[in-house]
Each structure stands twice: as structure tokens, then as C-alpha cells.
Image 1 (cartoon, one colour):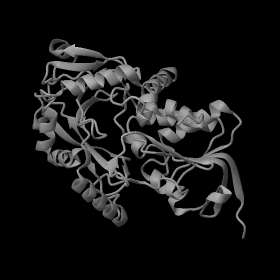
Image 2 (cartoon, rainbow, N blue to C red; image 1 turned 60 degrees about the horizontal axis):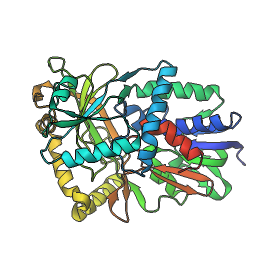
Image 3 (tube, one colour; image 1 turned 180 degrees about the horizontal axis):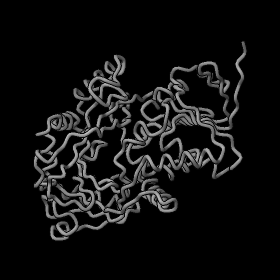
Image 4 (cartoon, rainbow, N blue to C red; image 1 turned 90 degrees about the vertical axis):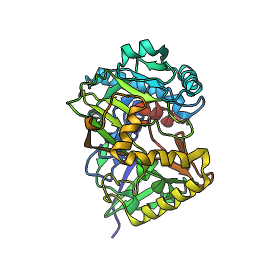
Amino acid sequence: MNKKIEKFDYIIIGAGIVGLSIAKALIAKNIDTHILIMEKEPDIGLHSSGRNSGVLHSGIYYSSGSLKAKVCASGAKKMAAYCEKYQLPIQRVGKVIVPFKTDQNEQLETLYSRARINGARVELIDQIQLAEIEPEAFSATGRAIYSPDTCVVDPLKILVKLRSQLEASGVTFCYQADISKGCIEHSYSRIELGNRCYQYKFLYNASGLFADKIAKKFNAAKNYTMMPFKGRYYRLSSASKLNFNGLIYPVPDLNVPFLGVHSVKTIDGLVYFGPSALPAWGRENYNGLRGGNLDDSSQMAKNLSRLLIGNHDSFRNYFFEEAEKLTKKGFCKAIQKIIPAIEEKYLQSCSKVGIRAQLLNTSSLTLEMDYIVERVDNTIHILNAVSPAFTSAFEFSEQIVDGNV
């Protein structure tokens, strides 16, 4: 029996922040366009987009010329304006970045230079100014970067608002639609899933942790594979008398795509410390062995072994330093480098955990630092949509839809 073909101008795979933002950008260009968003889960916000820390980054870390540098600062402004326009929670709490080693002044200067080039408003401050802004923060060099425009938001409320607006504009949502289990007829621009068939004029793959798997079905991402990293957090106990006004970050290792354990004061006033960043044994391996599978685990072990042996950008040193944070004591020691007054007894275990959709270049054996966007015929695949993907989503998606990336 022939299946009925449902025809769309655009199909978007993934209802995370990037997928929703692409739909928003498409509608802004043509209000009459017919869009289908396919999501493998029964609802939105169950993975990266709904589990991130809620920080709107200001564009400090990213090297000049990178996609992240191009879209982060402007994306943050657009996201902040969106929250203000629709009265979604947003707080401009500010952020300090502090050296925790005496030899990190050069890295601090590099970050300051990058921030200025990328359009972020930043200041270099001394220890006295740092104490006024964040009394618990410590700088090993007596200097720090202050980013007054860094905001915190409620990611899930943004996702829900976007969905309601897209639905009102006629966008169709299809949930529990796992494309990896479907049949993709690339030459016919058609997806068969269960007893339904969907045809598209153009397709965007914004499936986050599964973006590489989906891309390979379209002959994209040939030199890439996902290497998910798990991020764990601890929450500050209410018994603590420590005072946090905003966000405290360490000067990061610029050779790896992670920012280091930091403090985050969320929109509801709670303070969290994290995230750690160690390879996960599955793309959705949030707790214990759940979310892992044999194929992912085997591939992860193989990739991890190759990274450790190759030791590109001193990955081996990074890995063993990060492994120390598997214990509460080790985690606390990492926080104490930038917040000396924190004590282990003030760290409460919590359910906050995320999986970073980190892309590995299998040819160079390097962790990709920037967004990767590949086009194959009438499909575009957004790979390595990691932080600051939520921050930059509106600007990034507009650039993608306009064909500028």
C-alpha cells in the first residue's frame, strides 16, 4: 500500500533552541512557508537546550574569525531583547573571570583582547574592584576580567514561548519521531517513518547529540563523530553564609573547548558549581549506566584511547585533572582555586547534569572548538552546536538561513 506523502517547504530535525530558532528565522523571511519540526522526544527541552546553565555569554572566549565569535555577542543581545519583550525571566548579574595561577596573565590578556574584538563589553579590574563585585572570588594575579552584561535566563521558558509562537504561525510539530530509525530517501527529499512519509524542499539537521548520526545518512559529517561529555554540578547549601552576586569563572585552558568548573547563580537565586567535563558512555548517559549503549560505549572507549595516546593539545593532562573531580573532595578543590572559602560541607549533590554534544574530528583527532555547518544538496547539518549555542541561537540561525555560514 502506498503511503500518503505529506509535503513541506522545510523540515527541521530537532526541537532544541537551534531548531526552533531556525524555524523563527524562516518565518521572518516568509510568513507563508510550510514547516515541520521533527523531535524524537515526547516534548521539548529534555536534553541540551533544557539542561544548560541559563547563562547568556557575552562573547569573550572565542578566537577572532570563528563562527562563535561572529554570532555570540549579537546573539546574546537578541536573546536578551526577546526575553525583555515577552517578559521572560532575565537578570543581568555580570561575570568575573579570574586567574587561578600566577602565570595566567597572558591568557587573561588574550581573553580581554578577544572580547573587545568580538564586541563584548568588558573591563580589566584589580583585586579591590574584584572584591567589591564578587567578595568570594580570588585572583592569583590580582587581576580579573569583568563582564557586566552577562545575563542569566530560564532556558525552558524561552523554549516554551518560542514553540507557542511557532505553532501560532502554523509550524507543525511531530514528536516521538526518531529519524535515526526511519528511512531517508535523500535523492527524493523524503523521510519515511513508521506509516508516514514526509517530503521536503529543504531540510535542516539540528538534532544536537545525534547530529552526526543523522548527517551521515545524508553523506555529511564524514570526518566527524560525536564524543559526548557529561557535566555534573553541586548546589550551594543554604547553610553557607557565602555571598555570590553573579558568576565566577576561572581563566580556562584555551586548548580545550571547556570553560572549567565555575559558579553560576541561576534565575531563581540558587548557586551551582560546575560543570565537570568527562566523556560520557552514551549520548544520553545522564545517570549511572542509563542512557548508554554498547555501540556508543565501545566507540567512546576507542576514541578516548586514541586521544590519550595522541595527547594532542595536552589532552592527557586535561583528562587526569578532570578525573579528580569525580570525587566530591576533588570537585571542591577545583572550586577552591577561584573561591577559597568554599568547603566540602557546603556542596550538596543535585540532579542537575548535562551532556555536551562535543564533536571529534576523526582525521586530526582533535575536539572541535567551533560550530561546524555542512551543506549537502538541499540539506544543512549543524554539528558541534555546543556552548554558546543557546546564547547565539537567534543570530546563528539567521546566518544559517541567509546562507552566510
